Image 1 (cartoon, helix red, strand yellow):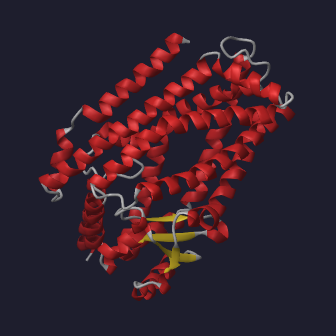
Image 2 (cartoon, one colour; image 1 turned 180 degrees about the horizontal axis):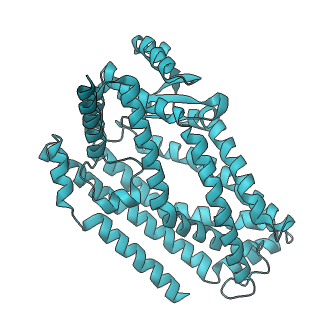
Image 3 (cartoon, helix red, strand yellow; image 1 turned 90 degrees about the vertical axis):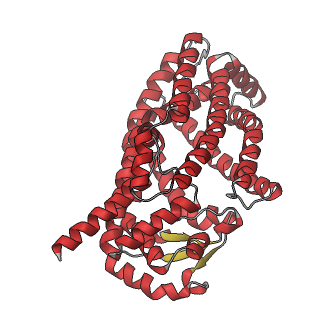
Length: 415
């Protein structure tokens, strides 16, 4: 166990050094080539550099907690206590072990979270005071804990009822939960944090005719275009599409509408419509379901291996003492698949960018929007290739700008 823990720690140390300290001058040259100033580049690099310490600090504490719970006798001890207190009710005992894990993680993470808030304030990126931040965090913690309790209860119910075949059913159940979450998030969860107002009822209502025309051109059914009061939390500019079935909608940040021209907003909206045209939410859920089959199969094999073996000494895969090991495996698995997952995400984003250019036919507005978004969000416009490979869900800003320039050049040649 010590060797395994040391190997994991060494791996994450290498990733920390590689993604935080190793420069890549070619990225700076590429950013300057598309007219980003040296000041903008340096500002984005410095902000990202400083934020990395919060990210890796939180990651290190999380990993250390999981290793203590999963790779020592702590998980076994906790499970025995909760089994005793609950009269050997394994689902309740698993929820008890999970509660201890969440509480311990919260205590370790809270100082970093507060420091991260004050850091964002110092850079002008957060508009929340400590009290409001704590309120939002408490709501998020409650929602996440309730959702995770449903997942743990469902998982242990399956493992108890179907000890040999649970891993075949779990991906199907998980996909159902994923669809339910995608359906409910826009109408139940998101309104807990922000107000959402139809675009036609805001000060930017003049955009509605252009929006309707763009939607008609895209040929998609959009339930609503909503404006979110994102300025309550930060000065971040963004837009996103969300929901499933009848709850599908596009959300525009009020910060975005305040800082961007109508043409730029239309270009960004066309990008979100591109996600719809390509059914990215549905495809994402299907890909996740496929990956889940492999993941749950491997999890089943590992849990059987841990039966009657120290330090876990599981009585069966459904033993609550195995929950910390399950969480650790999920943590490690998420890192293992992160490059592939983000590669798919960047592919989806490129498709949406292409749709934006085709639908709005405003390459200059697209380029201006990307530059403004980078400035508004203090984005790192000169990332290293390994940071893009590991962390980036979107193509680098420079690549997106170059894509628009190439599209414009092709259209000019056609004309």
